[in-house]
Image (cartoon, rainbow, N blue to C red; front, side, top):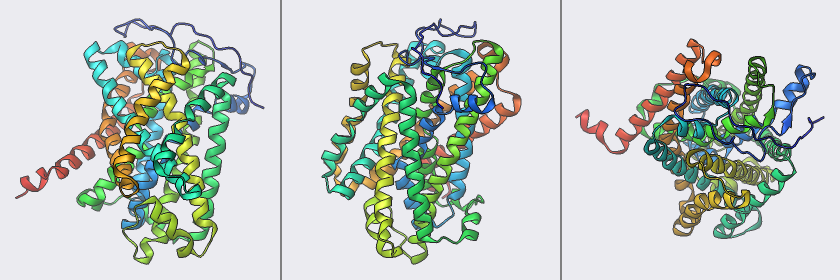
Length: 459
């Protein structure tokens, strides 16, 4: 049974002397603390009560941007880049746990925390960077959904992009019914995606020994610029900047005890929720790459990077008529799921950084237009032939922006002034900074290769 849904409360967020500004209104005020978690619940019922936000976060780790990068990586390099997917997922589990900790302890989402800590010009700059990331993310999600509609129903891409923008109406309707309804829809679509890819793995019959070997990291990934480009795309597609803002907000939809014990329990169950959800994302991401490697790379078709091409080749190559249909259905579910959570993330970022309070429908319409207008323009300009390049490029943009969300998150959750007794343990801080360093180093290496500086220096 789902826990009861109560009317949302909007108490001020908690304050501590470590913040430059006092806390303002809570994040997502219309659903803040709206899902009750009765104190008398046992472990499993509390785990169920806290389950949900992690799956909204996990959606961003299996969006259509992942499909483009995973298809390109699997068809061109076989199972080699599975290690990047695994590493990215482990990074995601760590970073999302820090997001939950920040939101639960401080009562601030990451955007609000940046606004309350940094001077206004810095906060504004971080907001601009985050909006660019959301536009890049939405570009992938909207184009992915439009491609799926085109493959299944032959709807032109430009109309498909416009149709996907209607998700804002679904968010408004479901959020008025209760936040648990949004979570239920998202989880249902995740199960659908997982079922479709379980079928694809059965159809493609991969070499399991080679699959296991692909999870072992190799230096070749860093040395090969083409492989590194796709690896950074996978990293950008897996560890999503906007998810860090989203998770730190939606964990506050739970009505837990505002005591040290209550917050500690909320952190434990929120971390369990996001970890389990992200394991589903790991399965789906790995499944996309495995299917591409088993279907195309092993047959010498190493240049299959476009989603449309993969759709056309799957059924005849595997000899299973359902393979292409399942692929397209999973893509549509993935794209629509991602746009739902992307709309929420856009609202959280705009409200958190700018402290703008508007009517819910107007707020979501503005944040949706900011994201969808670039997608419409790009689709109109490049059409079907350029969609895959746009998808992969969007993920690289996300990866390049990631540092600007990750570093403040680690700084805030490692500050005793801000977090008190819930400050990150030293081993967590070490792992978090190693994660941030890997992200920064890979991005710098990519930029040097992209502009030819590495080749110039090694002459």
